[in-house]
Length: 157
Image (tube, rainbow, N blue to C red):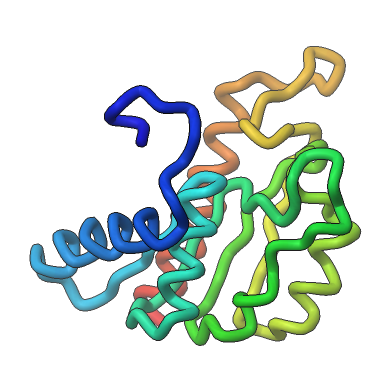
């Protein structure tokens, strides 16, 4: 849908199939471990693929969209218990698509395989306000550091 310039996402089945195809390209390149994930909907589709049984060694979520903006009652977590791989959720503390007070009980149900890294002051796009006293560069460094450290643990683990 993005290649066509559409703002409306493809149906979930097509998005998951597209994600599977991309993951298979990575798998074909070799390597001992495969960590999948993505930003927002990309991470959600990766989790749905993994919940269907797709073998991966970890899932990295950058701004997981736990619920639609303004609709915290519509949680998008039902499939997450079916994901067997370790998961890292990197979430901004001001993310309108992921109320952290709603995410914490989800993570508790997932147990040790799910971890959370909170990015103070960041929104869904990891943007921060000047009043937070942070630069976009420092946020990017934090996100990369958290992701790289976790991936290193998963790969070596």
